Image 1 (tube, rainbow, N blue to C red):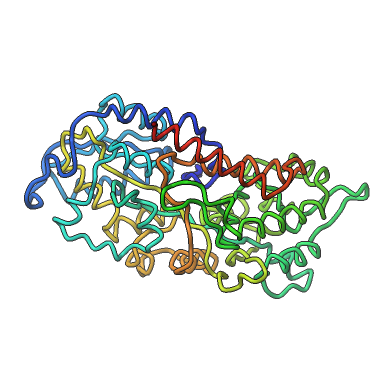
Image 2: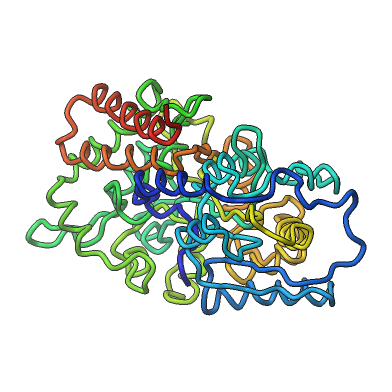
Length: 449
């Protein structure tokens, strides 16, 4: 199974690349809000509409099966599917006026610049005309698919993060329930850690190393309710009182294990999305991961007995327990689409039809994004998978805000955190001020004079 969203180390996105994409997209031609929209939804749909998405192989076949259902319901429509297309290629083709009608992105990071530049059309007029009920989506999901009061995208499946734990290791250590605070996480992890005779790590209870697998600022952030951006898209990281609580805990934990020892252990772990994933091989007793891991475990490590639980919160932040981090795939209509009504009909089907969402969720093992689909009796739900549904519906579950600078603010913060955990980040307060400046300077570059 291929990783599908930007939750995997989002700071690897280049700020310069995003800024360049924004400039290029400003040259997109044709189509303002509602351009080509009819007064009422067509009773019969006819014609060809193109769909670009990033899924491939088995996952691409899941998307194709849902597209086939749409075509069966609309015999006069042909969907021209382009699979295996990454976000950067889609950006370039849209900027060049290429044949993209509907684009499905793996990253919520595109929303800010696609909305602000008009690369994706404003869907507001269509939503209002067809009386689409947006209350079927959680507030968090709604927020990450719009920017500056413009809804240029709709959510289509989501990823949620939680704590995975090895049940056999828990049982052997007499641990009866998963940790709920970061302090308890350390205590449990220490009981589950096994060293080799030379003092190196054989089995680690939990790896706090920033940048390892799904260890990102975004995924850890809900443990303290960390704030990312101010209302004007400038950085709030340096002024937020919560991030230092989390970062100091993480740095102390890394130091407690030993930075060099932890770095050597982490370097020897298998690739995250292979059968050699360290949780699947038993080298890690606990890790933060997404709901898609349940599918990997079923396919690659069926003998591993495991449980899932919300990720622990910092001491003093217990009211946040049960919430977590959510992100997902987003889908929009390209500005240059010549068939906006067909595009909207396809987009609306893929994002609001319960049967379509459940079919995709069951096939891809991501979470559907509407309440009706999340609670559908046809959704295949295990005890472990239910944890992610509960987190998705928690009112304090958070995501990253949209920014015209895409994921550049995550990149800047992630880079500094990696430096900080190594002991080379200097004074934390001053370091976070530097992160703010880097983010704000990049925003100025995008916005221009």
